[in-house]
Length: 56
View 1: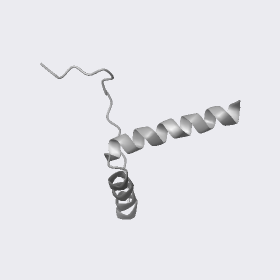
View 2: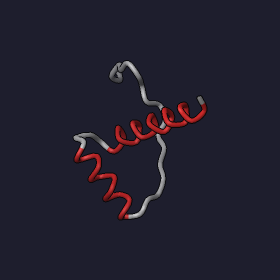
View 3: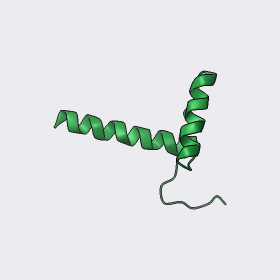
């Protein structure tokens, strides 16, 4: 039986990025002590917040 979590992640998104883009992602994630997945989720949240402010 799988681990029960509060907010399950059901979808996997993939895309191709350049070596330079991967290096940037890795550096930012490392400097913030997080994973690239968490970094991407936080980035999405920031974009949503910015869009909400612009529309308000």
